[in-house]
Length: 173
Image (cartoon, rainbow, N blue to C red; front, side, top):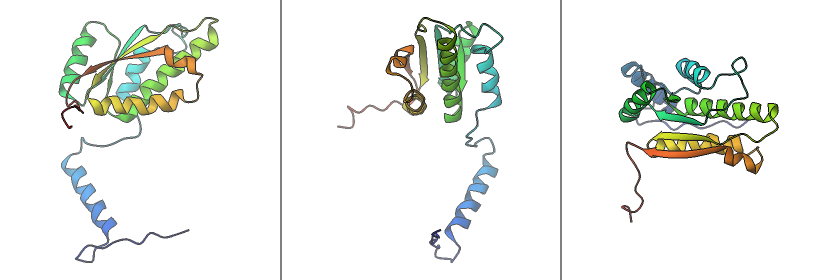
């Protein structure tokens, strides 16, 4: 097993100790800012309402679904308004939430395929967020669908509703 040689700062303190100390200090300053690899409990409850499992007619798929990035103030406001109008809105607050939502949707499609003889209808998924949010959806989508047959790509259709900071590549040229 190889060991990692740590660089030291000018005062002689090991770099890792200094970084850990700084991270702990930042977490004390901003306790609400935690990066989690687990989806939030609120999201799991929301998924059970929006995409009910076993007991509630598990073979039915929603025709439309909205994934909103609630880390963005505009996304949170729009998600609240759409939720008030009885839309199927899933409010995500990070990559773990996005992954959980997509995994739940793919499991629902898989269950439909296992119980029905016909192909599932396309689920239209609206994505409300910035470029960063869209990218956080893309990675788990590719990971989940890489092991599925090519016709599965047609089971989900994405509609992007850009809000927040949008990268404009034409401006950078």
